[in-house]
Length: 225
Image 1 (tube, rainbow, N blue to C red):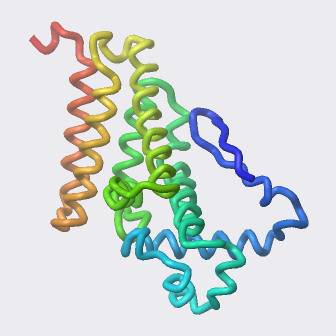
Image 2: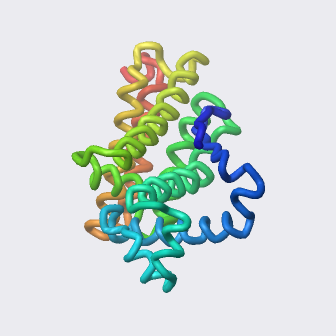
């Protein structure tokens, strides 16, 4: 049984089966994590839909029955991979930004996301940019999980901007939801250009555009006249 809860604004997951000592041995958890890390990298290159028990077993050179001991179906495997990608994203992008507040947090979230994309934490680029496009029209548990996590990410951007607005760092008339949408669009555009065109300047251009947009939201009206 899995329970989700909020801690410092970051979506967490508690797997009670993993916490109930004798039911899931530490060695088994370590093996599962290693399998998922390989699966995430594979899915980032070939897509989640192409990730099957058989394909992963062949890549890892283990038996299908060995994988079925960890994942009961292709859909279970896909959902577990999405959760693993989420954990990596949170540690790389979200959690480091939460030592700041308001405008500093918003800028840190943006900078961390662009650094994560540029560094290719996943060999296929941003996992969630690709997965969002792959599953936007495919109903089911995998799409629901991706939608939930992307809403959480947009919520983090929006809340940071809203906190900055409350602190007087962003002008009151700024639509913070629109601001979060524009930031996300620019960041995803950078990932797209980097992957499709092999554009080495994509993330630099996106960083400049995002900084400019945030600056526009923070500048006093008289300074822009």
